[in-house]
Image (tube, rainbow, N blue to C red):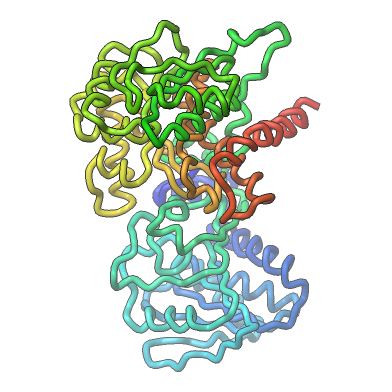
Length: 508
């Protein structure tokens, strides 16, 4: 699903009005009716009081449409016009007249007005600003928002939580409506998926308001939300007449004394993601643990017992994952640098491999094209440098990707894959995956996909999706606190099966 910018959303509205030969007020009616249907479907005629706070722009106009339909269907509705400006939008005025023609008298709120009484069981509909906000509102409006947040009423925001910007993070003076759910028109907003802004839109739903299909289809966006529908085309089914060699030979390089578990996790996930053969290269202290826990994995050991001192092997890997549990001993750093200078295989780099790169940035020039880097926030900071906010982080990540022709996976809630000027926002995963070894599993999954022949960008996007989906299925059985990295790996097969069900349904 595409994530459109503010400019593109306004353009989509304009194109829709032109191509469908409707007036802008008709599009507003359509949007407001979708919100009404959502509320009506859940309230089912409940007589709870519904307080609708409308700004004087188009978002407020949407709120007036909702209010009119609720009132016509017998709901108890109180309408407030928050008069923060003398400039009323044309479509807001049209809908204000429609409200008044039905003998509904909106309550005008200004800087001197008293706050309305709102009970705990009431419902608030926030239609103050929407996507058009580009500066902090007046102090009295901020105080009103603070009051709404202090009530225990259920809050529904139309399109955006009021006070939240589309492309800026909150400042110390920002006050944002703390919505229980955000009803976003047509597509989600990028701000829903970033740590500094997503906390204000943790629950959101998309309402289809019938924007021009061709515009939505052909318009390129800087960001895309990746769900099941987006990854189904990536999947390459297995052929009947095939063998283990058909699906590649992956090599996982890493480990050090006390951290062999990282290689075990990555190697196991690599095998579970579908790689036909998997070999692990690790220090000799890891041979017995690896062979004991994973008899399916072949092992090549370094001559050094505790750490990697030199990387050499006599196999021809289809893809290599390196860095998990590797450490940063001087011998290891030299071995890593020497390996990068001669390696030609597709590459995934994680953990200490990333930390070594950040300390020796000249090595970045030796990476194969489209190498996949999988940093967590601190590792990303060391790689691309400090950022001022989440939007700046994305711009720096894009610049880094362009400079070194690499793929960056920014791990976290809604992990984002960055390549050149585009970001792919993952929709799977949960807080239970914030656990030791989860990243090692992801490295294994992506390496395994690349070994099977998936090109690096698709492997990264697909791998992040499968990893998160496995965690989502596993958490149903184990809960957030008890979910472990090994369990995520265990449920990779379930993630594939979940995908197959939809593929087979399409085939039928």
